[in-house]
Length: 206
Image (cartoon, rainbow, N blue to C red; front, side, top):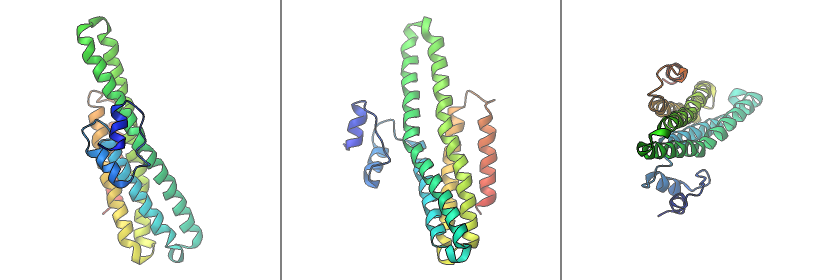
């Protein structure tokens, strides 16, 4: 058992962003609800942004120093935002699990069943906010990666291409989670937004 999994079983809040790669993978593989797919997608996106940052830093000669600095700053901002979603997704998922447990308990107490069903719906809606944010950020990373693959240092073109592909993978995974979380809310605009952003990413990453 990892230290992180032990903390989860004790009911304590856990931050996954400070774990080593091995410890995070152990936590991801553990027989506990979180971290799960959303956290994994957020980490993949953070890695894609980090690759963009690397490619931009080392492309000052090709892009001009000012543009390289601008792209680096943008990539670093996205990297931080994506990394923060690793823990945020875990918290949102835990809230869904808690509401699901309350709903199961209400089967013997029908007077509270409606309110608890509403609580679960609200938790699922809130849980969709994290993956849709991943898709949004992935669109920005894909755009950065496309610029760097085209105009950046040729020796780092592979890194830029990898960044774009990783961003697309993170976005597709996150969009699937949006669809699952909002399955009982077909009119929610986040369905259409996720599809639109995925189409934009596909145009950028070829």
